[in-house]
Length: 460
Ligand SMILES: Cc1cc2nc3c(=O)[nH]c(=O)nc-3n(C[C@H](O)[C@H](O)[C@H](O)COP(=O)(O)OP(=O)(O)OC[C@H]3O[C@@H](n4cnc5c(N)ncnc54)[C@H](O)[C@@H]3O)c2cc1C
Picture (cartoon, rainbow, N blue to C red):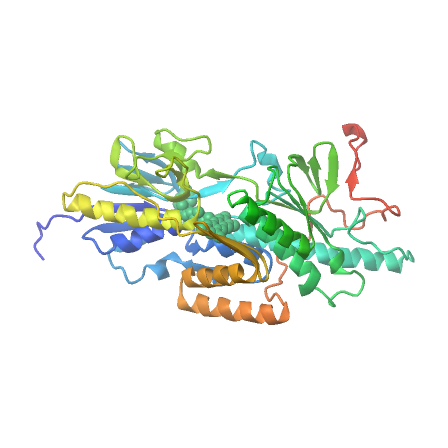
């Protein structure tokens, strides 16, 4: 090889989620040197995180090592590092360890939870974004059943005959899910299934079917991104599963073991947050305009203003479609944008003019539970069993790795036949926030909600 060969252009991709990976796979075919930087060693298939959170699947079945995914592309190197800043003038990506040079930069660092200015709520109401989040939610959910069983056992040993159902205060079997978008709906629906079916016959002192699952939504309907008709059908399906749905209710405070909706206090040892997302903080490091959620206002070709060599894609990018509607934060948008940026870099290398990005919306699907889902493909709408089959097929198809597809298919076929959830492991701490190990028995006929009391007089 001649020593004076022109060095290949360097492309740095930040984030190996849906957008970053789709860009990397496409760019690998170009005469460039690519570095993919991610703070985790694995790509997570986020649409199935709720299955890990609800013990249906194990983490390894919905995630795969980035290095393994890209092993065949010899012009791609993978670095496990956290990006903390950029210097666009000097074309550098700053990680915790080093500064990386680039000729083209693609930023696809996704989104994170948003607690609307109440970050102090996070420890009491975890959101679902990473494998770690899913495992923490799984721990809390499964632990709640164990604590309920133990509490009932202690109560009976102490000679108190009163049964503790979840409609009474003092039971750990009260779950509140905040936010009725796709994640909140699938979490609430699946929790209801676990309570009604998966745990049945396994406990001797409690009846898991008494679990109370409350889904709280600030807007007027569940799944607001879908048509009103599909929202109504989704709500019906949730209620049939045993989920209490409260729309047009805003959570005003979350504290250990309780949620406040206006003046009403709802006791709930397990509270899950599915109400808001904000863009990755890396967007604000670029020094270019961002929207209120911190998403970068990209140019129609997905580059950032003033820097045609820097692209932002996926959940971190804010771009409107031809009807002036903001593109949603979903996997197909990120995947198509990743492809598009790779195509744009190819055109730049061939000195071809750039073209604007157009999103091809192939429809959206949201699952609610076993054989329950809604689907919208343009004007064609579907709900119930066939929507669920479509959801199942598409999610298995898009999972990375043949092994994962096969394993997930087997797991789902098994749970469909038996209602069993195979990954019911509690790992980590055996405490729930706000839950005392041996609480005072609750007074007979007490209810789950409490009126407002002055702060100084509130129950511990
Ligand atoms: C629970 C859940 C369910 C969902 N369900 C669906 C669904 O059913 N259908 C659908 O279409 N979409 C769904 N989505 C949305 C979809 O997952 C996102 O739109 C998509 O992942 C966005 O892709 P992305 O590449 O922008 O970011 P991501 O896929 O989130 O990837 C971001 C990557 O960047 C890395 N990263 C972040 N910060 C840094 C840093 N500072 N340094 C280095 N690396 C960093 C992360 O580790 C991650 O690998 C769901 C999302 C969630 C959370």
